[in-house]
Length: 103
Image (tube, rainbow, N blue to C red; front, side, top):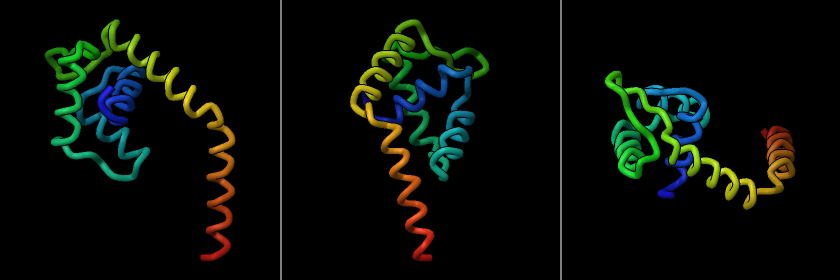
């Protein structure tokens, strides 16, 4: 799969049908900055060309059956790679607390 953005976009679209703007706003909530249309729409086009998403007349994107399978595969890969995610999250919390002490 092409990049982490595509993975995140598939995951967001799997939760509910979304427009490109909806996706950008959801990413902004998580990252703090909103990706530009020049970032979002080429990635959506890539996913559509791969047959992983489809778009209706209202420009709302949904996953295809192939998209659901791809997302499941990518989630398995992600959690297989980061099987110690809970430990990593705990480390992040600890680092944040340590950084607050120095501010």
